[in-house]
Image 1: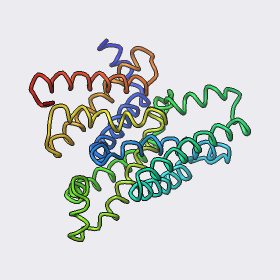
Image 2: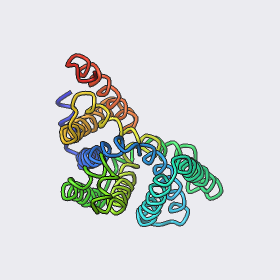
Image 3: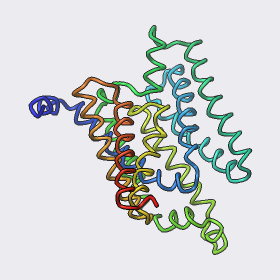
Image 4: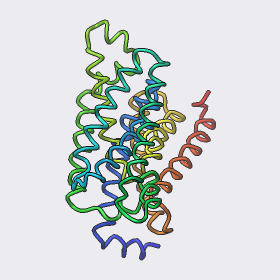
Length: 280
């Protein structure tokens, strides 16, 4: 196994895949804790469908850089979903269902009317569940991912205290004039960036797992916000790295393998939590 991995690591695409996978996993875990605690987990699923629809449109338009369309559209929808969800829960749920399902259907319809290849089913399956495109990344794509990931991490670190305050007591933060709307908007924009980055890694239908599972796993073991965040980041990076390695060795889909490892980590965390009494 070690000899096989050494052979694979000689190829730049494999190293690029590991770098991108680890960076995306790190970014996803940081905001995942906030989304779970604020009960905004559904936003990840909705935005992933929006990104799928935007990708279909970008493909039909023949854009050389699809992110130029996908990222702005996803950010706008993230802001709309967050603002609607804050007003009334029922309206927020309805808006998420409408936008996510509508974008998914619209994207598939566009891809059927204007097929970009003869293998439409394969294209759709790859977009929804991830594909081997993670192993064909170019150096330019890796640099873009690295830059956006660094920006996400810096934003989280700089505004950590504000995000913490908004996560646990939004009403108090608003009362003392912390500008909760601005920080909720910041969270929405950052999670939109993460969704777009993660599409090539796990596909639009599995992105929520990348965001939610590490946070839930960490909550089985730790209780403080900082401890949960750090544990979530470590677990997410380990799971992403392990999932990519297993995928390369076993020839399994990258996205599904990473999510499977995340599920296994969650099960182990639940067991550890029960043994240590943390789940009580």
